[in-house]
Image (cartoon, rainbow, N blue to C red):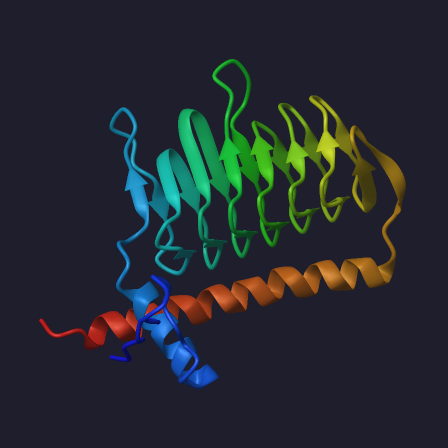
Length: 216
């Protein structure tokens, strides 16, 4: 175990005497000793999570939530399937700080396969088809329908009931159609979803290896 000395002048920790590798190792050890993800039932319904999905230690999953094969739910995410259900397909990544919730009067939240949802997005009671991309801090509201391989730009607000057709880019507040995505755009989107699927598996493998080495 690597210990970090305290600065005599400060309450904060100092890492000035450590290499980047040592600092990474320290962070990794701290993260692997955090409490597990918060997975809670709601009215006797417990989240269902694939054994090959990565769920970060401080992510919160509540109620009728299903997470598919090799999907990843990153740090600080909240998926609350209380008054309706949440479905996440395979190899979809929900990045740090994202909130996914549902409607008691409308629909749940349904996300397909190989989708990227960027950091701190808000996805509420809507449908997102395979290979779509929701940018960082975007907000997708009730009854929206994002078709396959469409993109919502970072910071956009997709107002209730909008349908974004396959291969379209929408941006702005409120979001509007901007253009059709290029082949280069699609390649980049596919790269991000593939990268996050691989990264999630790397995290999952490291944490499992660390857990198996802990003294019993």
